[in-house]
Image (cartoon, rainbow, N blue to C red; front, side, top):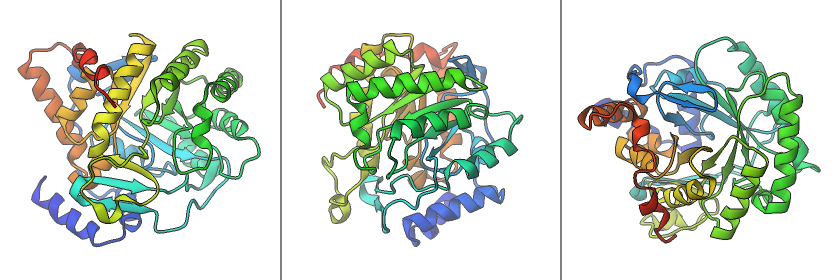
Length: 358
């Protein structure tokens, strides 16, 4: 981390975590020079689901909830950015405080609860950037008090299909009561059928990914893989935050309710990623998320079966130059190993990760 990043981090860490997040969004929206210019190298290109990604590193959903700064994020070096989670109606989310830093663990616990400005506000911003270069995915969710949550996802598909490079169906946040129950096979089958039907009826047909939790047992992973395959969902994002609290040092806040993200999530999420790759086979797209804070972390996700990788919490602790550093590190690695493509690494440690115990 550079001296400027360290100073910026110290200043932000004097603020409440949610206030610091809002300030970082404002900085990006104002065009402040918060990161290095993107580095491009053809060996990092990934073609997936009909999309040509300039590099495999993306910003995960949860940071830019309202589609305010996707282009600024791409300017930090990310190969793609995912906005959301966006629900049909605006909602305030859970009571504050609802974000907690676990500094000793380089982790965060959040119980935000899909706080966002709703479909209309996000659509207005995405429509304004239509025609610009850059890959922007849209993560869609359901309102907490919705009488028909599946219909909320259908509405999200129809609304954002014209603007999204891809759509992500998020049923794995632990912060909306009952939402993770939609990962159960019967509910999941109905959800995915209706989502695919909604995409077929939309004016555009972007790829659809399903975002799953890391707190699933093998039988649940098998059911999800079967439904994803049967319904021809384009890919899976592994994973959302975890409700587990293993081996944390930040004991003062470790007991807070919510989803844990950051470095402690790396191993668990990577094991689930590898097992999902085994279940889905070599052709279905997988995006690996959880605990990515370095080029080596990102490369290990690819070795474990990921086509693409996302991060979010790592940037809280390493600063806005992190995506540029990771991309540069990946370039140095493929150069050192004389690889024609970073894709050559995929699955090279699949068996190692799939065989580890959760």
